Image (cartoon, rainbow, N blue to C red; front, side, top):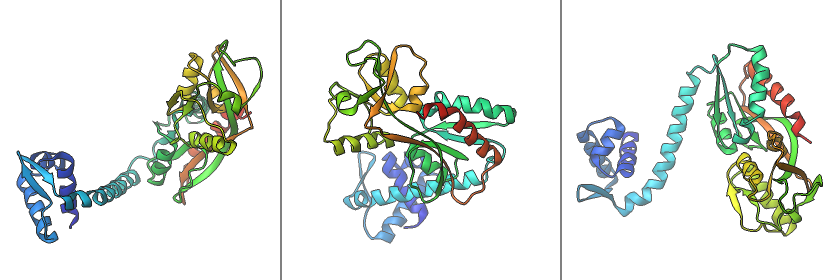
Length: 297
C-alpha cells in the first residue's frame, strides 16, 4: 500500500464514512473512494463493506489497523520535527516542565532569567515526564524539566537537583504529629493519596512498597504531586510527594515530614542529543538549580 492509501485507510477507520474521511483529509469524496479501490486492488481483498451508509471494516482491515496506526504516529512525529526544525526556536526559549514544578520552581526561575533576558519570548508547555522526553527528542522544546532519568537515546540529561520523598498531611488530622520524620509502613496504615504508577515517582513508590512487602490501603489516586498535596492539605489523607513540590506550599495547614527509609528524588534537565543549546538554556538551568536548592533537603 502506498502512503496515500494508508492515509485514506486510516481516515476511513477513524471516521467511518467516505464523506467524513474526505473532510478530514481535505480532499474530494471521489479521491477517497478511488484510493480505497486502488488499495484493495493491490492487496487482493476488501477492506470495508457498506452497511447503512457506513463503511464497516473487514477482519483483514481490523488486523491491519494497529500497524497502520503505529506508522501514522511515526509519520506525525516526523512532521512535527520538520516543523520544529524550521520554526522560531532561535527567537524564543521553549520550556517543557512537569506540572508540579510549574507551580513555584518554574516562575521563580523565570524571574531570575528575566533579569538577564528581559525581552526574550518564552513558550511554556506542561507535560508529564515521558511526554517531555519524547518532545525533546523531536526537538519540540529547547529544554525539558522532569523527575528522574528519561533513558531516551535521543536525549541528553543534566542533573538539576536531588531531593527526597516526603509525607504531607493536614495539621490536626490523625497521625499528623510534630515529628519531622515518619516511616513508610506507618504512612500506609491509613488510606493514602497515591501518585499514578505511570508517573516516574509513582512507579518508584510502587517498587519501594513491593521491596518492603507493603501495600497501600485504597484511597485516592492522582496524576500530579501538586494535586496530591492540595488534597492532603484539605484532609483527604496523607500523601507521599517529592520535597520540591512540598516546598511550593506556604500553607500553615500542611505538615511535611521526611519519609523513612529515605528515597532520593532527582530533577533533571533534558536536552536534544548532539545539539548545541542556546545560551539562555544554560542560564535557565542555572536559575532553576538556584531556586530548587532549598527543596533538596
